[in-house]
Length: 122
Length: 122
DNA sequence: CTTGACCTTCACATAGATGTGAAGGTTTCA
DNA sequence: TGAAACCTTCACATCTATGTGAAGGTCAAG
Image 1 (tube, each protein chain N blue to C red):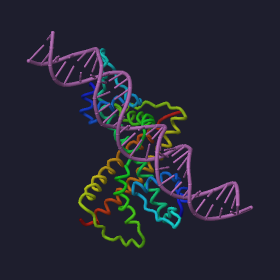
Image 2 (image 1 turned 45 degrees about the vertical axis):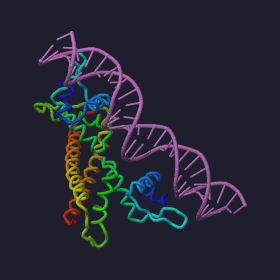
Image 3 (image 1 turned 90 degrees about the vertical axis):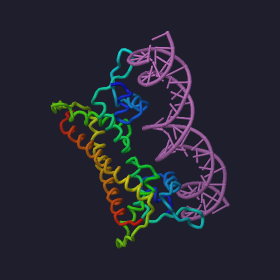
């Protein structure tokens, strides 16, 4: 699919899809005329990128996270044993801990909002 | 407490504590000489601000969220029934839903990382 | 009383994600 | 063939959160 369709299906403007490619989060093929050709799976990939960015994760970390997410969801779950270097393992472990912290923080704040709204009157 | 102590106890540099005040997230008193005087509870408040910022929540939303969090945690749980306007209620409801989405997204990604790391070899 | 460690305000710089638009090539359709 | 709707690259602007430093006031210890 071309960039316009991916944009329409994800709600992400073309400019940003090109930016994500520059940041090595997306790797579209190119057709003969130079147009980007995205895979069907890129729709989900872009949605995940958006969510991670919205959660305050910078692109250089998303770059490390995406292989994890896209790996286990692959067809027939033929999850090949991934081979990673020590540095990547370190970053991923650290990010896993950070994500746990964020989940706790957001859950706590969300529950506080819910409680507040249930008590509030307007 | 003065800004230096709050900075030391939260790990947030003074420059940012002043910025959060400008953004109406903190409201320190002033001593006669013009120095900012923070309450003990601001330590926790600043920690919460940091976590929310790190989770990608912009200051204008944090401004709305903080009253919820600081309310229910108050002494003797004498949670006064808060009175809010319709606009605030709308924003809070929307943000509650967004936070739920983020929690799901981050949990999913964290679990994916954990699974990936458990299978990976390095 | 002076030095050093605080504090103040103000201003300008930076980084990452995003907006906007120019200048031009490709495809489709009337 | 020509207009409309795509696509390309490139460049510059913007916003938010943050870094950095100047110029100067306050205070405690020697």
